[in-house]
Length: 224
Image (cartoon, rainbow, N blue to C red):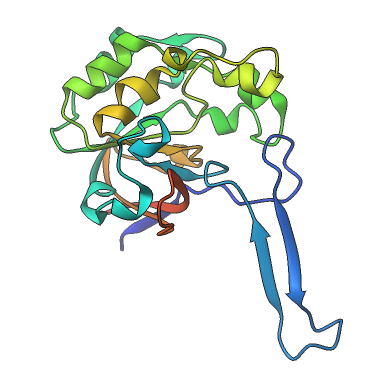
């Protein structure tokens, strides 16, 4: 039997970084005949997908994503040995990613969700981050999409801390990968449950017209 692994972070109201509301527009307690839940959430909160429009005014939007871009064979690139508060460099991804094939989805696995909870500031301020040479190496492999289980750009911590607004070029993975057409899948979890070096990934963003990103349900499937 295939193993199905859910890589999606639950959408929770009250997150300190992402103002998210979950309410009932209908409820049995109020005497309604059905329950109906409403949510209000950013397209870039929790597990989500970035479309190129996020950083490129001429880039295409979420509803123009083709399913072939976000479904397919994936290489699991384990860089968890890098550890906290450390840069992920070309040598790290090259050593762990020799099995990447052209057209792959890459799952860049730091196992960071096992170190810090996404509900806490430490998840953001102590994480490893991707350096430009590592992003360029990954782009050079001809990958079509990439997923992370950690805040992949160092400057994200500046946004969380509120100490300064980063310059656009500090958004390394967005500039080197996303702007050049590599779809980004952010804030995945549970990658540690993937046992092998390769799997199939099915990533389905909500079809939000003219949007620059969308909440997504992302799963990995491994054959026994």
